Length: 419
Image (cartoon, rainbow, N blue to C red; front, side, top):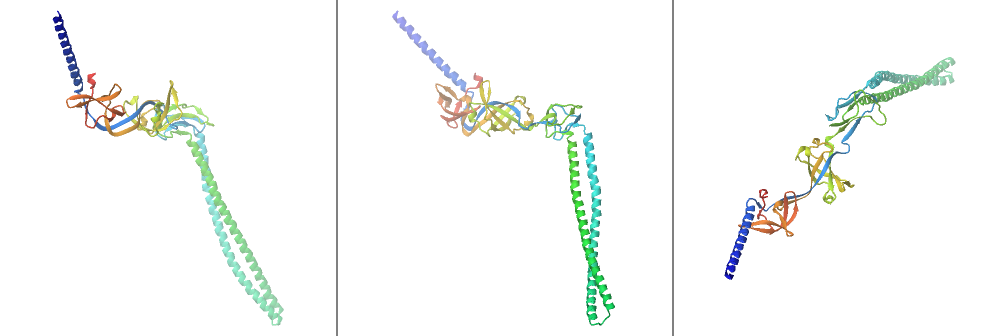
């Protein structure tokens, strides 16, 4: 009986060893089978560290403008509707402009009257000046002749005076010559006065001409300014789009009367689609990593995976608290294809924190963790071993390998079909 127990015990031990060896062989077989499909060569490449966050499209300051009226009157036309895309200068609305047209007509008539009358008067005064200058010239000639006559007559009188003292001529002859000299002197004085008067007349004519010329410049400038002002006021009756944009709001209708006062009546709002911004809500736990100028990739649900790109233009210092979570707003401006987007669209953002170039890297699923350390399944010849590694930063695809592997090593990685 004792011998039988020993034999049974020996058979049990043998069976147990067989089962253990079988399960160990099967385990190694299954593990090797797991790795036969995917082999990864350790190589160098870029690892992009990023932060993901949700945002919303908002108009920038000045992107949405209220369009109003600057004159009072009845709306005669408003050929737009909400959602219309309009080019700069497109008519938004028209206001009755009959009174403004009349005011412009009057201003034009006043200017034309000045343009017609002043040049004629200036031409007349120019002729007066020319005539006055000719009178001065003639008066100078008369004066020169009178001066010569007076000089000759005075010399003759003085000569006769000496002859009379010697009694060589009669008293009558002496008086006749000297009387003529006196008359010649008077003629000279009159010619001198005539020249002075001619000069005064010429000066007066010149002053009158200059005054009329200045008045023409002044009055025509005022008339032109009034006409331009009337044109500008008339232009106010046609409200036009200040830039290319989308009509987002309309408040008045054809037939309504608007009154321009301190605040211009609002007709509509227009949005410049190229002046939108992406406001990203960044969790306080990662805000320290985010800096102005960082590159941002984002997409919106309306356009699937189409990427929009931009850079962080500013980070608001004041936080926003939503559902007890603190966020800081990063603003992205000047991104591509902004005209496709609309305000209040939700954005899904990837903020590029840093890019480490040309480092050893592996796909994320190739790096494992257990018992407090990271490892990979390294293929050495026909064997597979667990090789400890030290990872660096990771992105959504790759993990940087700081140590434990070298370029060209073959690492086995689970395939998705194995799960």
